[in-house]
Length: 204
Image 1 (spheres, rainbow, N blue to C red):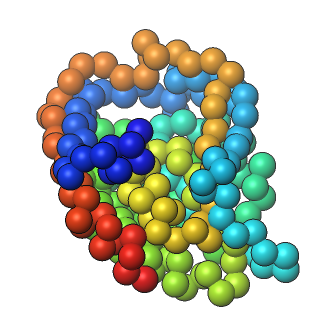
Image 2: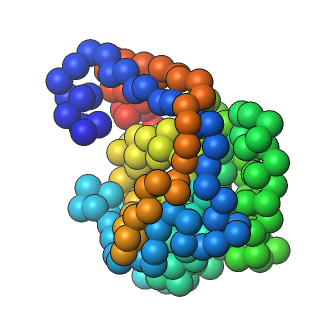
């Protein structure tokens, strides 16, 4: 969908609405989904997996612990960097602490978790550029899109620019959409201009 929009229109508007609240998977792992059916890489984002390199997994973390855990098992990275969306409401801020604490159970002392706003794609891309430049000479780098949709868009744009980045996706066995979220909070509009995107993809 992103490729079609960017190839055919001068401006692409992405509309995102916050939920009023999310289901609490810290109480039960099967709130959102059941198990993991498949972990896969799309052909356009297969990356450059070089022999003899260590592996770095940059995982965009959300509220689903099961998919995150299965991704760790599948890739077995030498190091992990987790990126979480910064909460924007008081209710989600209190939930965020519990979610981060539970995710950290799968992180070692050499790993790290970074908190970044989902509405500032420039900051996220700058952080990804720093991570890549620091690690690309010694690591095969994979992105796992388990977090915010807006973070995923930035990650996809970054992987379109740097073809050595592998993008990993996962699908659950079953979804439970009624448990995922409820209500609607604020709505945001993000405009991506084709001329900006072309310059971004060209500049290294």
